[in-house]
Image (tube, rainbow, N blue to C red; front, side, top):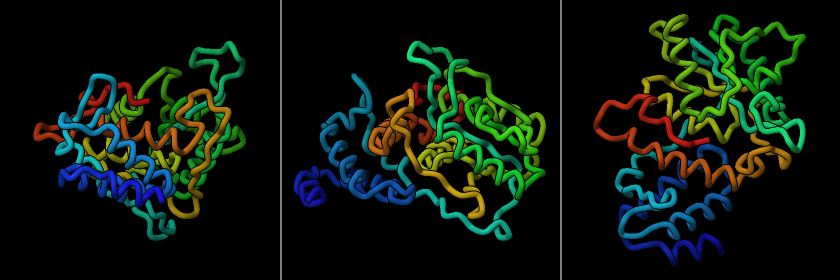
Length: 266
């Protein structure tokens, strides 16, 4: 029924219809539920006007520009024996909990079940690829099993950084210590976060690859997360769409860098 209502409400402009088609393919490839994707497409219609798509209060993005952002993401895991050798493994956090109702500072954060699952994925990846350079976000470092042999090469500071800022920090250090001709990077991340990280890394010429099938993927959510967008798949889906829209200037003709992307993405 949701799909029928959407088909009836779609604008006649071919570019908006193409955007919605691409959005659907993009998020289907990232493992989001079909009903949630249809809800997102309805939200796009509600935000559409002659000025484009409203992506934030007082901010509109051209539909033509957004069409180029939403390509399908390849994230089907393959066995380790067939997996490309990575130059690095980057572990990205997915929300956090706070240790008391009055906690506010980054140092008050606890990893929570989302980051515990990603930490286990990272440790599995490291056992398979022990020579890869390893960088982890602060909340993932807190979640690492102290009995495991993994000692990260780099841990991000306990700061309120965006996804783009964390990746910039990782790549700055990677270039100085471990970078060779290999541009393959494993992303140990929440399954739904992989697409945004991969998009940002692609702007700097890196190939993001999912962990091998032996390192189990994670797509759960935690209702007790401190940040609302990490509590449910719908909250995260809408936030992810708007964040990708706000980074759409990276697809213009000029050479993109992470410095262009330091926006409030979460």
